[in-house]
Length: 303
Ligand code: ING
Image 1 (cartoon, protein in one colour):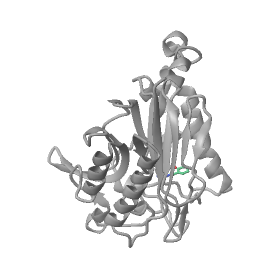
Image 2 (tube, rainbow, N blue to C red):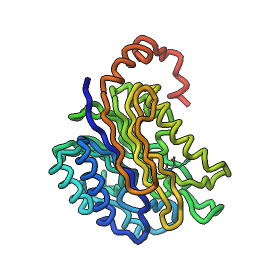
Image 3 (spheres, rainbow, N blue to C red):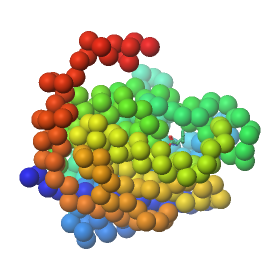
Image 4 (cartoon, helix red, strand yellow):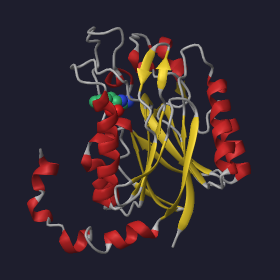
């Protein structure tokens, strides 16, 4: 067996008025709690340093650049990197990335993977950006990720680490099966992701319970159909009154949820995950090489 204790650090609300330093202090408290449980890795949410600002309308980058990080680690992240290295815990962190590449300024919804010794060993920029570029003005908030972020340019990859091969994605990506299959085909045996999922769907009316159901369905099907562990960290609760769902979870390669957050505030869940559990499934029912027939799958990648 290759058993490691993984943790998920769920965050409660971060308001517009909260500083990044206050958010980082909360992440460090979750880190210490995870360490106390013997965890060697922790997954934090999407956009974990600030409120979910794509709910608001901004026109001028000067008004929303304050939500973004520059440099890796950025000044705000530095204390988290230091404590994680001191405790020997690797982590996934979601944040808004502002970077100059090719002489141009780019902004992405990004997640990084940091090894137990503090090295950045992976980076992912969110590919499935939900919502709209322009306000729809159907509720008292928006979902403007297409306005503030570019589509990620790093693809879906898996990264070798001291705790196995890890695949990264972010929030809406979990609803698209292609996300996980592409990473599973690269050997990912653990998928890490963070999410910020509004409870109210502003695009069409639907019962609130479906938010929780679709979150769970996405995580459990990804785990089962790719014989991999899934760790998902919510930022949740009401941020300045705008509610987001909790439901942070650890899901086994059998598709069974083995740990779930019970509240909508800062909370650590953890589980002793045997990475060998996925391996036997990959050698039997989901032996990709033996059973998949790619000659029949062309449409998925061609339209
Ligand atoms: N949030 C939501 C998510 O995909 C959403 C947006 C919710 C889209 C429900 C469709 C249905 O979980 C982010 N940040 O992607």
